[in-house]
Image 1 (tube, helix red, strand yellow):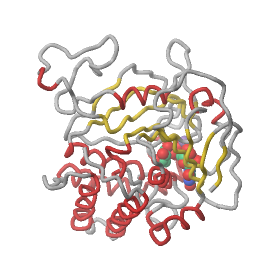
Image 2 (image 1 turned 30 degrees about the horizontal axis):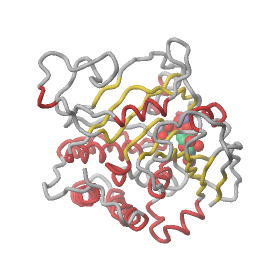
Image 3 (image 1 turned 90 degrees about the horizontal axis):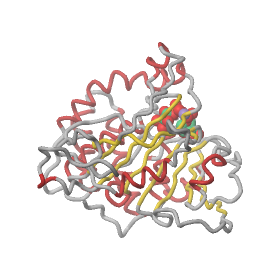
Length: 357
Ligand SMILES: O=c1ccn([C@@H]2O[C@H](COP(=O)(O)OP(=O)(O)O[C@H]3OC[C@H](O)[C@H](O)[C@H]3O)[C@@H](O)[C@H]2O)c(=O)[nH]1
Ligand SMILES: [Mn+2]
């Protein structure tokens, strides 16, 4: 592991400066950080270097960071490193595990600062922090969107007994330019760019799943961290690009059970690089069929009242995966095992935290 830090010019203390880590999975140099410097420079970065550990990843001067490559992961986790994917952005979840902070923001290295309709640079991190520090409304939909936002409120007919809302566990941001489309959609719409800036943040209703993208994502690690396992993807696995989807389905079922909220919408980032749709099709291929069985599984998943911590919920979910998804493919038995290994590794690295809502 390597690290660096340097003195910073005096500036107003950014929100959650010492309570949030920024996790970046990468196989490239991190020049993209130059554009984020005004927003990121006061935060600690956790860089998870994927692929060849002998490759030197250049981190621009002036950032406080720790960097882990595959050798570091193997050294820290020993045999439990088997649950961390190799050659897939799913490796980023190792950063969530080693962090000691309450909040995590994760971003891809081909995501840049977007501009809002007025032309102003969007501080995505600041918006995610606002989303996480404000309650969610999972049990009753507010038609004027985020009621806690300046200039908005609960609309007529919204029960006062529900206006305290629920603690927010996840803030899911979106993307201008290259949208996060699956390979078939990318293939039929290669030139499609997302130019629509929708000025809204919404709570995803309780009982509704969603396709969580890991490109521009923040979460409360103390509320939901152990559920953010990005699965077994990439090298040696029959599937890729379902890392964040798997984590999102598990997370949403557990958030619904524990009474936590998940928000989507603002902030936007500018996603610059379309990955190769043919390569993506190969990675996603089985997932496109499997998800037709996975979604009903997660929609039907019930967690016992006795499950009051994220770890207990996650272990229970792994048992249901093993029992009900093995018939889809033997891969899910392997994944169920890896889910257990993930929790064991999480608890080993985070002995004091049993994550309860
Ligand atoms: O083997 C790898 C490949 C990439 N990375 C890092 O992951 C980030 C995403 O990579 P990239 O931008 O090339 O892929 P996308 O297709 O745009 O990624 C989307 O789909 C896959 C994931 O769900 C991802 O979160 C989505 O954004 C980037 O930082 C690469 O450096 C890697 O670590 N290992
Ligand atoms: Mn990308």
